[in-house]
Image (cartoon, rainbow, N blue to C red; front, side, top):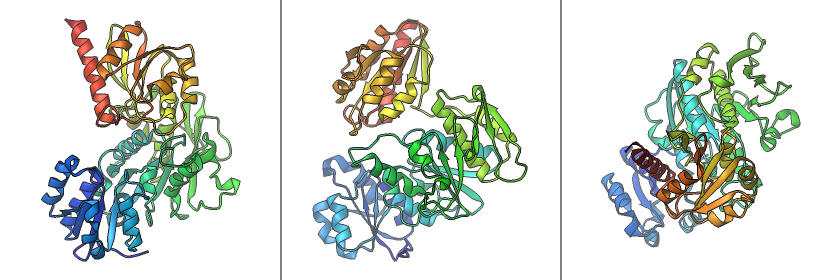
Length: 466
């Protein structure tokens, strides 16, 4: 592995100027590195980013100006949204300049052990929950990564007595080299980002990089209910896995399971010490909707046990956790109708999980920009769980084509979608925003989409209260 100091001896190119790229630029400049920054977007769309870059003392270079600086580079830091086959990345690699991701850079600068979480759905909730329960156990914890705040800003000045909990995406894992979490977690695998990956196998292999550098002193936590993940069980002969394995399942205990359901109790089979199973908490004590969140809680509990937490404080810690913004977040109940913001649902599997989270009739608001995934499974869940669909965005027609006999209406804006959903809903129903698609056809981000939904719901409440 090439040794980098990331200080005054470093001349780096930061590729991509979203949150991650700007954070890397700031950190490297603070460490004395010479930094150039680039982005393939039109310069007119980058005015704020360029101003920030120059404020840090770095220089912006457009892609067609790369020839001016490429000979001076000894490293490049890639933002996760930029694919490895982009023209800028290829040009840098052709000059034998090492390309690292922000998550790799953060790891190399971090002195604290890392718990890393990936999966198709539930990553942010589980990452935040692990941070929450570890704090309840008296640990000093910093949370970052794909959850919304760049990891590089969370790891500086930490000690080996601290812990870092990092949400990592498949995009971020593509560019790791030495990244070696003390604990790795894979929650689930479902079709997603198939506009970037050629197949589910390729997507899964990107996720599996999370444990690639782990050793026998490290821990891997996996979902026995997911066939692709369960196949990683060393008991089945998986040769790439060297970490100690802990498994969770919604089923009853069997040989591989470390935490499982027994009736309504989540039961832990201790990995050390007294082997007698411990009932940690009951399902009705989990303040999150849906079976997928039972799995998320199991994963978080295993991470806590893996780093030495005792069972006693974990029950109260889980019970005090609150839903994250835009993830099955109740917004309001108006006229007996519950309005729920699940805008962070950006793939069909997340919508399926959301539809199964409520035992009430559902009016679903879904659609946006497809990521190359198939909506057939979503259609099956829609036909069995929803009374109506309000379709929005570029994928509206494709999703509607799978709705069968479910009543479908189209909406042109979020205000329109909420108004149409209100007209379709009756007391006792749920109006659920769970798009199953990216947001960028109509909104700045998934957060923006959820905030506009919440604003439209608040306007309904004001009308109802008038």
